[in-house]
Length: 432
Image 1: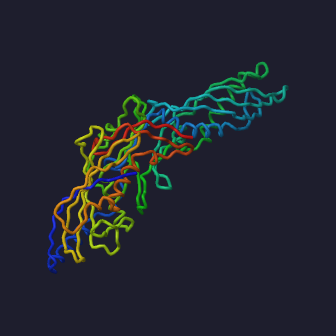
Image 2 (image 1 turned 120 degrees about the vertical axis):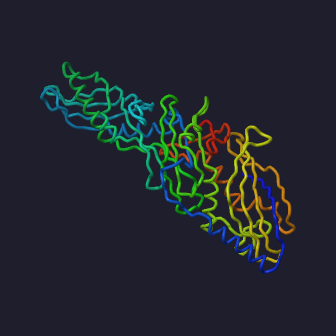
Image 3 (image 1 turned 30 degrees about the vertical axis):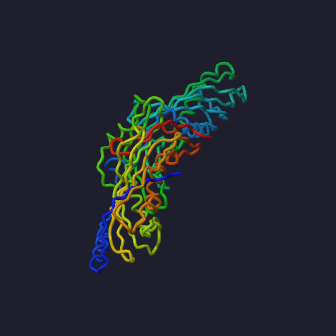
């Protein structure tokens, strides 16, 4: 359960004359019109969300996908040309056990390696059909690509088309049951044929996807803006920008460095605090998050209190070195009620920490001054404050990582504020 603390400093004008109320209303309308809408989606600039992952976790999450694709490609049949003879063959692949390692062949290349086995049938001249086990290995350098899916997610995929241009996979193996002098020539021809089959038939394979929880926001789009594979640490970093009007200026390289993983950590997730505010603001603009409230903070379509959100402050927590202090700046304009017309500047503060391996926002304190009319203590449950908390906790957990075959469990170590981002590091593992 996410609980958000609230502290509000209120400046109140309690006059009920028309000029005072008109001034408050005009001020609200002016600020409302100044709110930015959705921006143009661009890859330029620092990411709004980011993920770092060690390749050991990447293997656990995505290794089965490429293994399945290669195994399916190896279930093949055709004709081999050996010493001027046409030799029909068929291969039933019974398994493949593949893994990923960083390669220095390109900036984002993986080495796909592992063992292969299966059963081969070959019809030899003057001998007839023979069946023999195949045992061998594959070594294939394949670049990673990053793109937007049709469903709007940002995904990493094996760019097998580019891999073919770089070179065919290297297959080694042996057929131990073939007769006499046919054994080695047929083995060589078969392995050469299978390398071509794998290169031709394994499609670009989606491995891991990344998304921002949509939370009912219409028109939200993502695009990749940062991708880096670090061979020295065996880790990859993926950064994503949105079409939210995030105005904070950051540095992509600084974000990449901020996501560096320590011993015992294999994943990190990060979000720009301003993206939290802009997600809430978009929800309010679209009518999915209440804009109007009663003086006690209850969402009401005819409420006299109109809310605007401004920014999310991030700082160290004064009492806990393992927690962060978050402060959501907002304003409330009250007009159209019998309690007078006034405006309030609000600050919703909370403690962000890892509790039992999960990200949590915990109640700190409730303070308010200055207003005899607004029951400020109850504003902690206002929809826009609760939704800001949900965005933070939802983007710093495993639900933002999409895998085709398996899920992931993330146990966080700690949260920090680095390179203008909220960063969670921890230990992830595949869940089947």
